[in-house]
Length: 146
Image 1 (cartoon, rainbow, N blue to C red):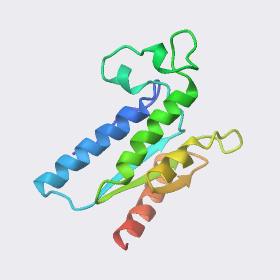
Image 2: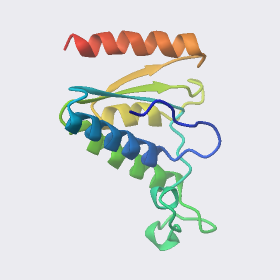
Image 3: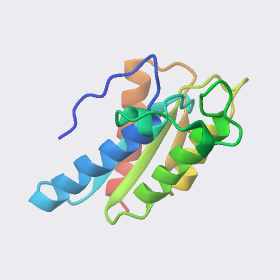
Image 4: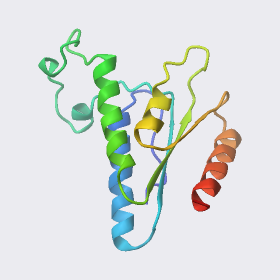
């Protein structure tokens, strides 16, 4: 089971969602779990493309808006939303997206991720351990009662 995922710095959100899906699918196959709840704590700002997370080089020709050989924000967003959609259609999977982005300058991408996965969305003003635990416990209880 996935217990810890590093945070801070580069944000390979698409890779994190894929890792969560694989971990959940493996747990379901062994019979360890019935429902899988993926908790995504993010400001929604992906900045590492999936190919780079997998050890490959980014191909700027794959993104017409690429600048200086780096992917555009739209490319990264589209990639993350595609992974979120994949997660959303997996049987027994639920996504809880906890948005840590400042709501006054929010891009809304974390909400888009939750929507793409047909999951739950919560915005928290201060991403401390107790706030995250509280939101997560509330969401888990709601999912259990579904």
